[in-house]
Length: 216
Ligand SMILES: O=C(CO)[C@@H](O)[C@H](O)COP(=O)(O)O
Ligand SMILES: [Co+2]
Image (tube, rainbow, N blue to C red; front, side, top):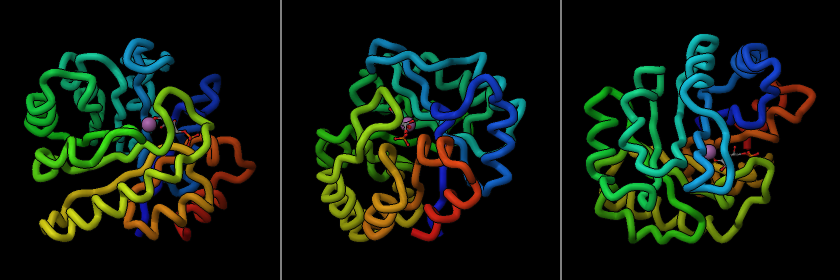
């Protein structure tokens, strides 16, 4: 079954604990937590103190999406604060291999995020080492953008690779512009986890929205 990771970036931060409780009761499987530093992407979101709050108020599994320079400096801290998955961008570090080891040696699952324009070939050497491959279907930085359809071919290509090499534990996740229509396309292309921010948090009924996404 497809899992839903609700992206905290779209929550009402004035009532964050309440929002976290609401998405849990509505059936979200994970929390997706976007960490941006204003350097690596053109936006700043939040960091350690907010991660602490999220960890205090929610026991849902935490999927931390790092969009920061030199993620190796912060990986341990995010794991201490409850990260179950940590995803890094290959372009953000000269020590990608070390980052993946650091994540796994500290007990979390390691992911790589692929920008819409980044070819699958660039990360093939790491496919046997990662637990999660995240397909960005928007340019990273902001929620509420439109799904970039040409990424779908890359999902299909990655799924062929996954089947050929029997990488049965490798999960595929998609992030950006997910709604009931785009969710269906992703699920048809073997995506395991759908990240959704604005579609969930801007809806009147989180439960119905999450259910609709799951049934896509
Ligand atoms: O990583 C990011 C943005 O860079 C995402 O996780 C967004 O938070 C997704 O938001 P929606 O497109 O679902 O509104
Ligand atoms: Co994200």
